[in-house]
Amino acid sequence: MTNTQIVLTVAIIMAATMLTRFISFLVFPAGKETPAFIQYLGKVLPAAAMAMLVIYCFKGVDITSGNHGAPELIAGVAVALMHKWKHSMLLSIGGGTVFYLVLIHLVF
Amino acid sequence: MQKNKLAAAAKAAFPHTIPILTGFLVLGIAYGIYMKALGFSPLVPILISIFVFAGSMQFVAGSVLTAAFAPVSTFLLTLMVNARHMFYGISMLEKYRDLGKKKFPTIFWMCDESFSINVSAEVPEGIDKGWFYFFVSLLDYSYWVTGTILGAILGQFIPFDTTGVDFAMTALFIVILVGQWEKEKSHISTLGGLGISLVCLVIFGADNFIVASMVGIVLFLTLLRRPIERRLEA
Image 1: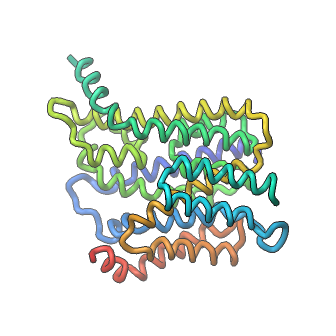
Image 2: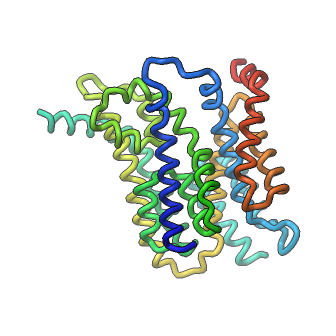
Image 3: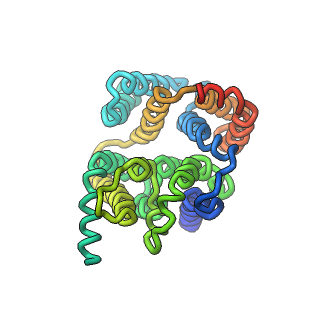
């Protein structure tokens, strides 16, 4: 990307983020019932969006060549297990990242 | 008088934000280092934290900025990742209604953490509620920006090869997913999101799968509304 494209991309992300924050206050005046379908999406969409983000993180992994995504998968599973076990965000993210670094720099 | 009111509200708000202080500083530092590892000047993550202020999306932004320029897809991706803000907004319509001049910044700083505090906190007697909401939001925002600045500076001095540090984003999202999995009454939405995105990634490839996934997910959730709602109510 050129510098102009970087600035434009950040501006787009800023505008879209602001839209998500302000739109409810603009569209649904206080005191009026929010449509049921919107309330439903509000409850269930965030979970699916987070799942999509996890897949997004693995989009650059090539399972057909190199080490077939083994370090990413192993470290990913390790993070999930670590978090299920200790429930420490810091430990899971910090420990998982260090583990991944060890895998790609020293093991694979 | 006005000054006392502000100080009292700030004092009442601060203790509520202490857990966020540590979390945001650490994550903000990680973000600054992450962006440095992707090759950006320190100014880029700092400006993004100031103007965007949305943790998950900012990590994604790092990845978006290293790919080809794609304005429409970037716009849609941001809407999807930040869609939850719309629902925080719906929950805060009444509380944020009469904030006056404080309304714009308080909504601009609305994030998972400031929402969760402001939606649930019992504002003490005699404290101005509007200013309390404002200071909770401002404090959370300032922790995030401060963390990013520290990380962006620290990133300059890290002597080792930073290839792979970007796995921190993957780890962050997995941690959020696990936490969400343990709390949710029905896993249909999470499983649908995983499955549909994976299928779309295989079919459409890394550069084009996001928009298809989003359409697929909304369709999926619309079609399965009845069974999902039944499980949520159970």
